[in-house]
Length: 268
Image (tube, rainbow, N blue to C red):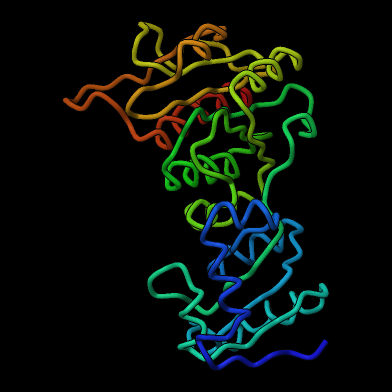
């Protein structure tokens, strides 16, 4: 496959990639954008085959080493486009781009197609809207060996390029799904997964419950927390002790604290 060499920021292929900033376009085409060398390396390592890779050696931190990833992607059958700096910066999402932008299949599967191991540890995030929080949860899930992350009534999509970036590409290494709250509640029940809900409105500390077996840790937004519907399904409600003046933790931090307590118990 002949490689294109693009110098003009007005190139229509670049405009098509830039259009993927819109969620509707991403969902219609079933793709998302990976912006960054480390993120793309993790995605490819997780089995993702990019449709198109745009790269700019001028912006790479270590072209000699990093161009091997271009060769690896090309060997997968992906098309590659070498871009001049001005052209590449037309499609890059981040400030200070590092020379890699790839169009890849969207992350996630329908909820019913998630494949879980025996006694899975799952994280359910309800209505999280900040890509940074979702990315933080995914990085924790990857590091802790969580079986899946499920978004209930998501305010943003797994393919949001800022979620991909905030997760450092972990959205491709951790099984993810999104569904309505009603569908998630039904799925949890059908799979016999106990729900541990995080909320400040309980006296039970997060260290005081049993996380062994099939368990889902549910985390809501900083502003409103989990809905009454999900709290009603909880087998336990737990809180993280807080000694200061603030009344809430970042949702990603809260998930990490409770997930690692679960990991500690399940590995002991």
